[in-house]
Length: 468
Image 1 (tube, one colour):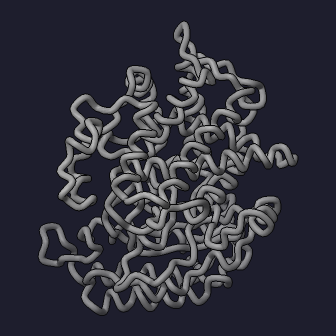
Image 2 (cartoon, one colour; image 1 turned 60 degrees about the horizontal axis):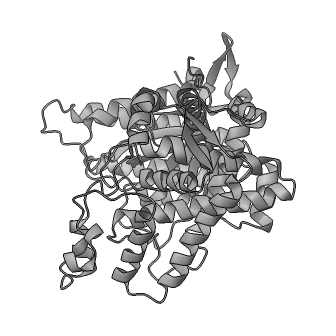
């Protein structure tokens, strides 16, 4: 069996393991994936296995499955010498979990040993196994396994080194994954992993630009057809090119990610866990996206080929996918997309006329940067304001362009709220859908609902074409 597992099948021929280029071509990856998929249904929400629960496996079966994962990791580890320390710690964590009776998993040691941002190289593969939840995917801490490939082309590495320092960011693409990533999740974040204590700081964060690009292409194509948008040839060419879109998202994500800690931020930064009205999160995410847009306008003028694509991606993804994705309960990404569309519409950059959406491509950069400036001013002025006043000023900005729900207490102003309560308690008075969809978006959501749903689990290898 060991001899079989140390070989791969390529075009019907068994090859020695040392000749494998892709980890997912190794038979040990298939064995690992099967074992993880067997373990996942046995786990509770916290990642433990309750052997007294209905349908629970015999303890011996769980032990055998973990042993299979360990063997497979050890078979695959020689293919990835840059992750030797991580894989050794991973094997130890897996064995400790099993020996401890499969309680709440603790993979802190292997998490600390996994340092993918220290050696970013385009095409470098990583085999990743952790008990974790997947953001926008599975909320439970199940065991997951995935093989990823780093997206780090020379031009992006040079921009990070010289202009957009972000030593924690890693652009990623999927090679293969277990069920928790057959979802809408497009990130690999260390804070999702089951550990006994949270590290003082995290040292990496991965974003799957291949999934983002494929999803963007499919939804944008559907929106263009539904809205009758006349696309410039350059945009049409971009939507037909997965690699081009992927590079745009790699640049967008890198600048967006660093923006969370850059700028005139109030001394209550977004990245600290806290309770705020959801429009505050919506403005922060939009600020980061519009900063990436603003930087892309500069980079385009300097001849960076991917910069124009970033501008198209920000406008299309924000206007067409974000507002109609997910439910309407505190949907802050959806809110940001609604705000961008309303701002561009009220400044005559987009017009919905004769059942067709017209976009003024010439004025779009200027007006989009103008909205970015309004949000930046809100932040700069917020440094001198109490938290509650800052929240109200942010509400005023959003409600200048989006109509609040008619039943909103916040829309009535401070006199309608019990200001003897601390600010965090006043968040209870925020409606789940404080800024409902406009009639335009209600109609668009119906047209795109099936397309958006079809992007679950999408990758660069998926067919992204939309039937006319």
